[in-house]
Image 1: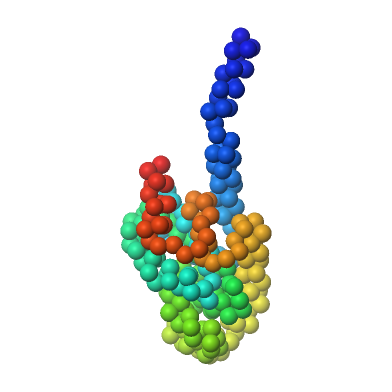
Image 2: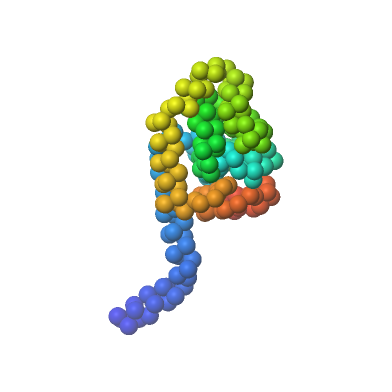
Length: 211
């Protein structure tokens, strides 16, 4: 009896690919780590009941991030986010001080309103070349377009507590989630690095919608 039981257990273990089981556990752990609350309020749109959560780490000075925001995100939003199938989380991972300043400005503009934040990010991405070349003037311009005075923008950029939170979140992303470049995406815990077309992203989404 014991021998039969041991054979059955061995057969069961053999049927479970170690690499598959290990990767599934690892992905689950990463998904939990990504979902953990961070220092700054998350920028989130889409249904909390969506079966797929996409978290993007982006830098305002990253050309591939700007390209994703302009060319891929509108289709993703129209087909999957606005229809309740995908929940989208945007997080900052500034590659330089200019991107950090832009991220903080977007936070000041939004005041914890995710839609306002993403609207500000859209403008900042469109002004990316100017942001890099003339950072202060561009921040003033984007602030003015969103109803801020020059003093408001200056005060925003002096908010050290916000910069500290941003730094803490970036450290967590780097050390725990192994984010070291932008854009980096997590689709239900699966890490995807680099620029992605809508078709490539959709290929990742569709199988998860069926589960």
